[in-house]
Image (cartoon, rainbow, N blue to C red):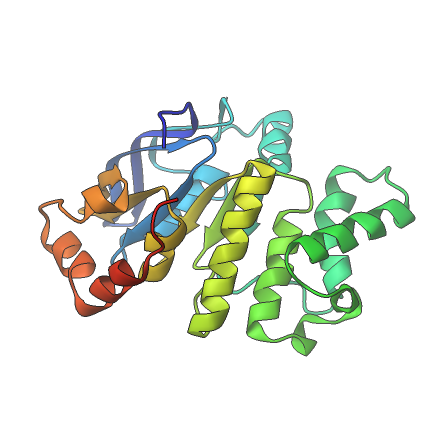
Length: 261
């Protein structure tokens, strides 16, 4: 992938919880139009990093720019700009259990565009549900009536509700069977290409890293060790990187990855 302007720029990030320092001097660029896979061992703060970028957590120090504005700002107009231009799929889907899928997808539309008529909101929700690969009749179902994979897609539909250029996915294939995970990966790549999305994707799934990620960022030792295409990351000299990318699962994922076009 050619060098592109960063849509997210993190510099000198410090996050701590009491005496525990999770990030210290962390730097990261997310390039416009890429799928960036974010990996790291348990406790390295992958979700904390995502929440810091989104402004859901205020870091202890550092600078975070998203879409050219300061993500740490508490200015309502700045917060609204970031919220309108970012979509988030949390690990468990985070759907409102008492709302139908359609009503869940309409939540951000009601919040940011309350003037839209109900009929148009409904049509937009239906479009996003179909974009996420769900049948139209899923619109009127409650989350409890859906399989785990369908709930992920419903969460994705809500994340796409505002047509955001920047999409955050936290372990999107966790809990899915291999066929379902592969289908979800293919969907993400298709949407990214069709809609021109930039995707920040936290994952442990090696198949995801090898199949759809343009670059991979590795979190360890409180910072980002390396950010590069997976073939370069494999060669990075660090014990966790070597164990993760050269074990039997990594070898299988490497062998199964699609050939370049």
